[in-house]
Every structure is written in structure tokens, then in C-alpha cells.
Length: 124
Image (cartoon, rainbow, N blue to C red; front, side, top):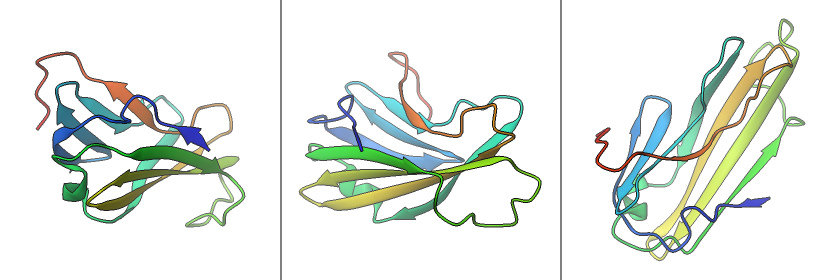
């Protein structure tokens, strides 16, 4: 379990999915995504909960968990590695769990993370 200090206590005016990224917009804005490289694929597999429950209320707790010992979502006979990453984010309005699924040849990262967006950048 990895505590997500970057967003703890922060309040976001908008939280929305854009492709395989979740954009958190506020005083400081973040993108939860994977920096794609050559030989891996990392996608949002599922979102449990309503992203709107993360808006206009402080993030009370947030952490991520990763694992490769869960069953793959499809045939992985041609792949050497796969990773699930779960992001659990809690507010007074509710809890959201964002699940990423990554595959690669074993030499590349398969995880997602929070990246601070440059001030004034509008991705919505």
C-alpha cells in the first residue's frame, strides 16, 4: 500500500475521465495516468464509485496497491508481465476505486501515478 500524499487534504473542483487518464482540477491540478512507452499497454480497466464524489470536498485518504498475482483479464500467453494497480480515494461524499491494468514484455513499467499538471494547463 502506497499513501498518495500528493492529493491528501486537497479539494478539486472537477474530477473527470479523459481516455485512460483521470484529471483532478483545482488549485493544483493532477493527472492520474501511465506515461506510455514503447512496449507496454496500461489502461483504466474499471472505476467503482462516482468521480463526482471527489469534487468540492477534501480528499480524506488515498492510497494505491499493485499486484501481479491476480488473474489476467485476457489471454496473456504472448505477454511476460501484467500488473493491476488499484487507486482508492476517500472523501466524506464517498469512495472511488480506479483500477488500471498494464501489460508488457517485462522490461517496462506497467503502473500509473499522479502527475502534477503545469499551472494554467487546461485538459478538460
